[in-house]
Image 1 (tube, helix red, strand yellow):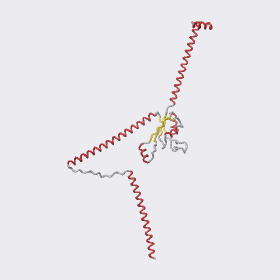
Image 2 (tube, helix red, strand yellow; image 1 turned 180 degrees about the vertical axis):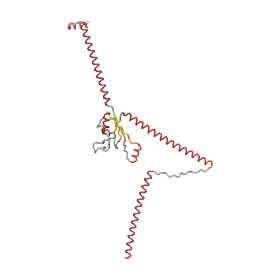
Image 3 (cartoon, rainbow, N blue to C red; image 1 turned 90 degrees about the vertical axis):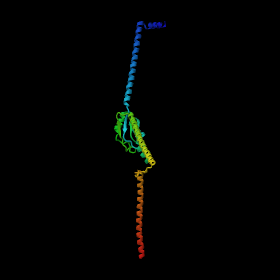
Image 4 (cartoon, rainbow, N blue to C red; image 1 turned 90 degrees about the horizontal axis):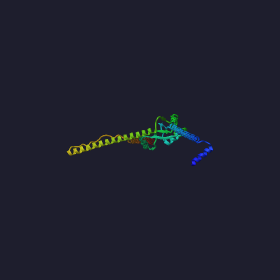
Length: 274
């Protein structure tokens, strides 16, 4: 009843028939639907534009890796980051340390320094990596003469279609190869020692058997000289040099004494004649 009264009041105020009011409501509903469809289409376009922009950014920010063929002594990853960060944003850095044999020789000589042989640097943008490789190759590492690595040259190469996973796979492969080689060497050493021990046991068994049978067993003696080691050769050289110096000193003293004897003989002969 209330709704009907309100509708009648509206009709009286507007002066429209019920058919005209229904048409207006339909128009309004159709306009509202069209507005909703336009808003949805605009939202879809905005989302598509955002996706396109994100894809473009992802395409633009493809990382690139450069290879360093020469690493000067005392250069560390933090120094390398400080030198190359001026040209672009840097991600990961890996420097290959020296071989174990080289490090052992250095430790024997007294230096505990660990240097690197080669390295890889990842830039956030591959275009920056290409630019750096082209511009810095065969140029001094330092810009001023007083800088630490001014005398060393950059040896840079851009690696096309190379990813950081390739480097990790390569390092893992090298590690597995090294472990396999060590296992093979250890197994070969074990085989040699077991073969030697078996032969020793056989010879001992034969010797005891001959002694039981009453046969005369001759003990073998190995007549050979052990090859001198490098330390023994150096010690021998030092001893020879010391003995040679002493002999030279003795000869000089003998010559001086002979010259003094001749002078004394002349002096005494002259006094006797007087």
